[in-house]
Structures are given as structure tokens and as C-alpha cells.
Length: 113
Length: 113
Image 1 (tube, rainbow over the protein chains, first blue to last red):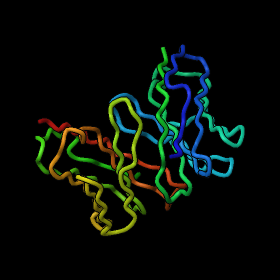
Image 2: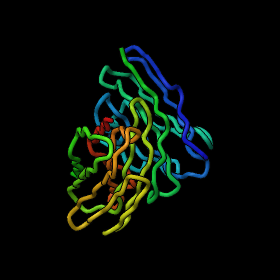
Image 3: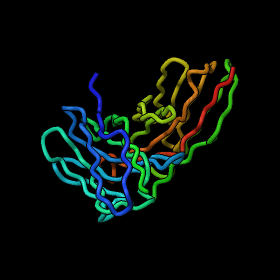
Image 4: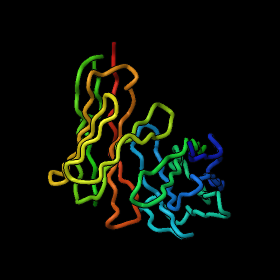
């Protein structure tokens, strides 16, 4: 069964460093999303992406964040200058249609020291 | 602002018992989703409820949606230990966006023998 994959599974970085989280959505999907979950808390929407551009972003998704689909398969989330409060599990999700179920990847656990 | 509230947030059940998790949301929505998350894992889609009065069942879980009351329920029948997990409901804000999901805080379910 097709699934969303994410790399790395864990990332430790120093405050102020740039990180890139990678996702490979399900191959025929058109809508892509990033969410994050701070430990023990609820899942929060960051950004949605369709047709090679951002569809919507939340207040969390400030100028330090960017997304890109550099080729036909990858979907990346970049945090330019990480802060301690960026420590969280970051989930990528994709769907074939914005009306359908979103399928979540396994997540990348980011720890900012 | 769309708000999604779940209750209870913590639920300890004995095997064989029945219980219901409630999900209220604050504004009109097109779709409601239920996800399951095991500790340290990703989110697994359980149900997508698309219209008022929708009811879906899978095994010991049954979900329903009342769009007029802005309420969804997840009913657990004859709980077993394998159902121990955190259950999230999420509401789709499609009418205002490309389908980003707003999640509740989750209900942590523990089923004890």
C-alpha cells in the first residue's frame, strides 16, 4: 500500500541552524501538508501546498519557514534559523484531493538545543 | 476562529466496557476526521465523515456526525487492550482553505484488563 515517507526520522540541531525536513508524498497525490506536534500536545497545521504554491499557512508558519517541491517526488520543509520552541514532531501529509483523507507520514522528531 | 474540542481528554476503561468520545467544533465544516495515534507513531486515519447523519463502523469503533449540533462521536464497544491509543478528531476548513485540518487535543484512551 502506498505511504508517505519522511527523512530523517530524528534530527538534532543547534539553535540558529538551518534544517531541512524531507517528505515523499504518495505518488499520485496533489495536495501536500506540513503539521507539527509538540510533545504531548495536539497536532497543529503549518502549511498546505498545491500546484507548486502555498495554498494556506498558519500563524506558526512565519518567515523562518519555507516549503518547496524541488522535483516531482520530494516535498521539503525548511526552517532557516531554528529556535528552541521549534522542537516538535513534524508530520508531512498528502491527499489526492483536498476533500479526501490526508495520509500522514511517520514524522521527523526535531530537537533544537 | 475554528475551535475543536474533545472530551474527555483522558479515558481509562476496563476491557469489555463501552464508552463514547465527543468532538465539538465551533463553526460549519464539510468533513470530520478521526485519527488514531500510538505513542511515538504517526496518525492513522480511522474515519472520514462527509455529511450530516453519517455513521461509519470499523470493528469495535463507530463514528457519527451531527453537523447541526456540530458534534461527532466515537463510540467504543466492548473495549480491548489493543484500542489503547490517543484518538484525535479533526475538522476540515475546506470552505475557507485547501483542506487544512484543525485538530482537537486528543483523547488518550487506556484499556485495562
